[in-house]
Image (cartoon, rainbow over all chains, first blue to last red; front, side, top):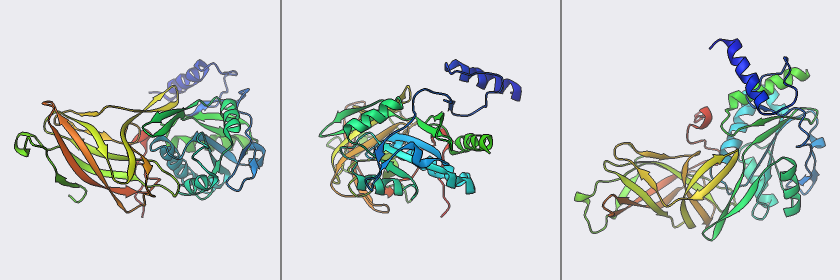
Length: 197
Length: 157
C-alpha cells in the first residue's frame, strides 16, 4: 500500500476516535493518541516502601501506566514482559521509561508481593497500590474498569488492559492496546521523545 | 521428544484400544513469586478423534479450572468454561491470549525449573473419559508463551 494512503487511513482512524485536534500535522502513532484528554491527569498511590507517589514524581520520565493484578495468569505478565522488552529495544533511552503497575486487587496484592512481582520483570518497574477507595479513585480517573469475579473458592478480576503513556512533562499522550508489540511501542516512544527534544 | 511429557494414562474401563490417545505437548506453568497464590498452565493438545478437555487438577493448587481470556472493549475478561474442544487432527493450543488452566489457592510458590503434576480429563464424542497425567515445566514469570501481537520467545541465554 502506498505510504500516503496508509497514513491517511491512520489519521482518519484517529479522528474516528472522537479526539480533538485532527489537524493536518497530527503525529502518527501505533497507539491511540490521547493528547489533550481531560482525564487521566494524576494518581496518588503507595509504593512498596509505603511512600505516596504521584505523577509529578516522574517528571523527565516517559511513564507507562498499567492497571492489573498479580494473580492474573495471562494479560498482566504478558504486558509487563513486553514492556521490559521495550526498554531493551530503546537502548540508552530505555532508562527514560518508567513502567508503573497499579493493582486493582489490593486485597491480595500486598506491598511485598507488588515489589517481588514487578522485580521479576525489571528491577526498575514500580508497583503501586492503594486502599479500596484510593484504587477506585485512580481507576476512575483513568477510565479503568475492574470487577471481581468469584471463581470457586477464589476470584479473578476483569479489568481494562490499556497501558497509558505519559510524556516527560507528565501529560497523557497515548493509550496502548495489549496486542501492540514492543517494536510498535518503541516507535511511538521514539516519536514522542523526538517531539520533545 | 523430551517435551512430550505424556507420562501415564489411567484410561478408564473402556480400554485404550477403543479410545484414541489425546496428546499433550509442551505443558508449562508460569512461575510465581512468594505470596502469589494463582498462576496459569498452558499446553498444546491434539487428538486423532474429536475430544474435549473437561477438567484439570493438581496437587499444588486448591482450585483448578479451565479459563478463557477474552478482550471486550479493552477489558480483559476471564471466565471459567466447561471445557475446550479438540477437533480431530487439528488440535488446540492453550496459550496466553486464549485458554489456560487456571490454578488458584496455590499451596506454595511455583518456582522456575520445577515441574508441576497436572491431571487432565478428556472426553470423547462417545462420552468416554480418559485421564492423562503430565508433568508441566515451570517457566519464568516473564515467559511470553504464545505469539501474541508479534511477540516471541527471546532465547538469548
